[in-house]
Structure formats: structure tokens, C-alpha cells
Image 1 (cartoon, rainbow, N blue to C red):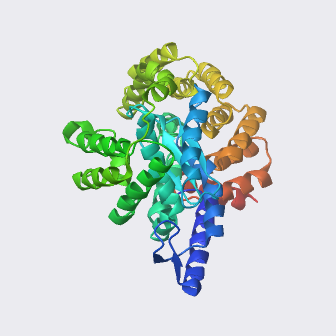
Image 2: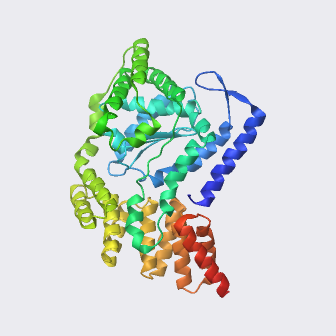
Image 3: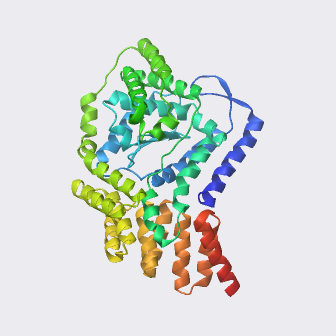
Length: 430
């Protein structure tokens, strides 16, 4: 489960949308012009996308910050495509996430993300346009809302945000830390929606001046990567965007009808140059995370420090170092690593959360309260509330502690069980 406050908001939105659908019946798909069952009003879609977009980003590593120019570049390509879409009035946003998993996704209302792990697989701007155009169609055609009505995106949200509530004891800190920012957003669309997004995405590409052949090359690449061992690490991408020769063939036919355009290979390669230079650093980091899962902590620490040497600007490398040092009970050194992570990226909830949890463990209550509260500004988690309860209980502020434990207890799972135990203990003492 994920934080109940988020769960209730999503469920309320879906239930309210269902009532609206029962009254409104069919609506016209803005892209195809076909009448389809609409389970959500567009205003509900916009509100839900706006609410969930920052939360989904937080749980998946946050914005890629080492090279801010890449964010502007990708957004520029996306906005060029959005302007020629069938719903240009949507409040489109595009973000590059600091996540090695090759994937891209769209939330209702045009909130779109692409992982840096996907960008390094692409060759030119037309292939990027194929990715973004595809996701724009999902938003413009209201595919995300339809998928959410079937509990598909809702289920993915549970998987994403649930990563923050799976471990509770301080001994599990390293396990928790290795999960934060690593979840993949998976929204499973039907075959018809995928083909529709390919077709109309290529239409947007052509209208924006891009070579539609980029979409053909993209699907050909995905089909090749899906074969055998090459599919490793691409499960999220293929789960949400299953490749097939049928999609390749359909794209070839669409491309024939749309003519030619630019590929902008030089511009694209220039834009991702920093990512390519840092490929070894992120490989070291990903290998470190894998080593953590295998409980090879010394190897993980060595790999993490190697990643730091390769790219000292990346906050995630210091956050993982903090997790590993805490696991070794080198708490002061861990605090310094978390401090560095916070300094390098103060906009990611997990940097504040992990430092706050460690400060709470060390009874640095003032610092812990500051850090934990700061983490909830970016993503509200049961862990933050549980450890705030620990802080207030340690200070003898029983009423405050009980309030925080009660919030954490609603999340369920291990952290909810521990919080409920404290609620009962404090209640019986009262």
C-alpha cells in the first residue's frame, strides 16, 4: 500500500469520475473523433495529473539535474510537438527523470516524463520526437484516464509509492534507501491505444517537421532489444509499450504516407553528450544498487565511491553512500554523505527523509524534525510520520507523537504495524 492520503485522493477521483461517466455516457475522443466511454471529465483529468505529476517524479529519482540544459532541450522538443497536437491547449509539461530504467510515461493532462535511461538509447531528435509524440497522444486522446478507470495506472501508483513503506526497522535502512527513486512507472495501455499513439504521434512528428522514419527506427530498435538477453533492464518499457513487428510494419506504412523531415542527429547527440560521458558513472551506481540487493555491501560502497569520482555532481551517489555507511553503523560519516546529497539536490524527498531518519535514530531531534518535515513537502510518506513520532516521543511530546503515529498507521504494511503498536502503547499509557 501507499500513503492512505494519496490512496484516498486517487480513489475518490476515480469514484467521482465513474459517477460522472454514468451520467455523461459517451464523449468524443479528441484525437480520433470517435465516441468513447469517458470515465472522467477533462477537468478531473487535469486536476489529477497536476496533483500526481510531482509525486510520481519524486518516487522515481526526481529531475535529472547534472545537466540542466537537457531538461530545456527535451521540453523544447515536446512543446513543439504539443503545439501541433489535437489538444494544444493542454498544460503540457516535460521532464527528464534521474532514472536509469529506459521508460517514458504520460499522466492525464499532458504531464509527461522520460527517463535518462531511455535517452541514451536514442540516436537522434526524430527518435526523441517519436517517444514524446507517442506520449502526447496518450494524453491528448485521454488514454491515461481510460487506463486509470480500469485500475491500471492506479495499480502502478500503488507500486511506485509503496516503495517508501516496505521497511521500518533501522536495520533495514539500506534496503529502503536502495529502493527510493528506483521504481518504474508502468501504465499498461491496450493494443489499440498503442497503435493509435504510434499513428497520431507520427502525424504530430510530420507536422512539427520531423522525419516520421524516426518512429520506425524506434520500434525496430525496441523489437531488437526485446529479444533474448538484450531485454534485461527494459521490462518496464516493454510492459508499458510492448514492441512488435506489427507495430514496426504499421509505422512503415504511416511513414510512407507522411513524407520526409529532419532528424537533427547532431543536435541530439550534443544534447545528450553529458549523459554519454557519465555512462560509466551511472553504470557503477546501478551495479552498486544491484550489489545492495545481493547484500554485498562492501562491493556496493566501493562502486558508489567509484561513481562519485566519475561524476561528483550527482547527489544520488552520495545518498547511497550514506545508506551504506549507516548500515555499517558509521553514523557520523553517513550524516556527512546525506548532507552532501541534500546540498547537491535539495529538491528530492528521499535525501531529506534518509537524513531525518538517521538523525532521529541518533536522537538529534531538532535536526530530525527539520529534515522529516522537509521531506513531506516533496512526498508525504509513512516513514516520515513514523520517525516524527519517534522524535516527539523522545522529547516527551506524547500528543504530537500519537498524532504522527496515527497517520503512519493508516499506511499499512510493516511501518503501519509498528506505528499502530506505538499508538496502542501510548494510548494505554494515557
